Amino acid sequence: MNRFTWFICVAALFLICSGGMVTSKNVGLAVPDWPTTFGYNMFLFPVSKWVGGILFEHTHRLIASAVGFLTIILAIWLWSSEGRRWVRNLGLAALAGVILQGILGGLRVTMLRDEIGVFHACVAQAFLALLVVIGLVTTNFWRSLEEIDIKPKKFPPIRRLAIAITLAIYVQLALGATMRHQHRDLSILDFPTANGAWIPDTSATALARINARRDARALSDVDAFQIWLQMTHRFVALLIGIGVIAFCSRVWRNARQGAWTIWSNKAADIATAHVAVGAIMLSFGVSISAICWRLVTVSRHGALGERALPVPA
Image 1: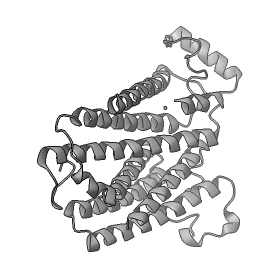
Image 2: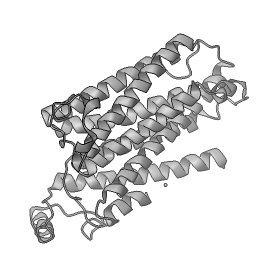
Image 3: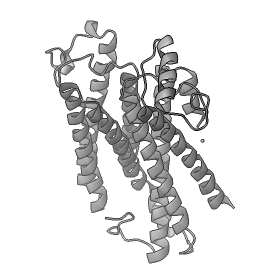
């Protein structure tokens, strides 16, 4: 079951990459109906019609369906064979999450709202994180943590730092999703500066000058909100980098891809790789936070019984 769970994690990451490519190429509405595909049953849509943007959107739906089916199997498997009730509940939560994702994906098509697309992207990352937790807690490694002798005061600060970094990564992913689902060109075209300055000038005069240069390059106009949104995205990336360094130094006494996304003029493959790395970072953050939480609980209460929760209710 553990290997099956990790397989679903990989499939979910692949699904996120597929969704990122759909967003990068702005082909989310290449298939205008849902749950059908141009009136066809989704699974019977002729392969000969998988062309252009339809290819990306339709395959994204098929991958999502496969992940949903695998999640149903996982939830049933956990409920029938897992002795820990809280782990079984995680399986049900994953099932609810994948159902919610399917509904959000459909609403994004039928309601034509970018806000739904942003929520859809954020739930996708949370769903992957939940699958990673299920994969982690079903390993022998997780059970072996209760046998480690830990000083009660040693891990709480590390746990708090790990959780803070993980939350920052999730906020960063949400900011990135907001930027990507505006379906506009990059708000800031240089890196690490912003239109040649470290602190962007977003006055009316400066915006007029910036948009004049953008018009000459056939790029869409930007406003102050979009510029500051991208600057906030950069600032949170800096905080995450500082946090990771602090975490590593605490235990033992990464944002080039974001820059390359800009330097490559928002190339779809680079932007999608950027999303994938963010999802992987979130997965690592969630895993490390869960392990730290487990160790803190063990250090305070001794070896945990099977009914004890390693995470807060």
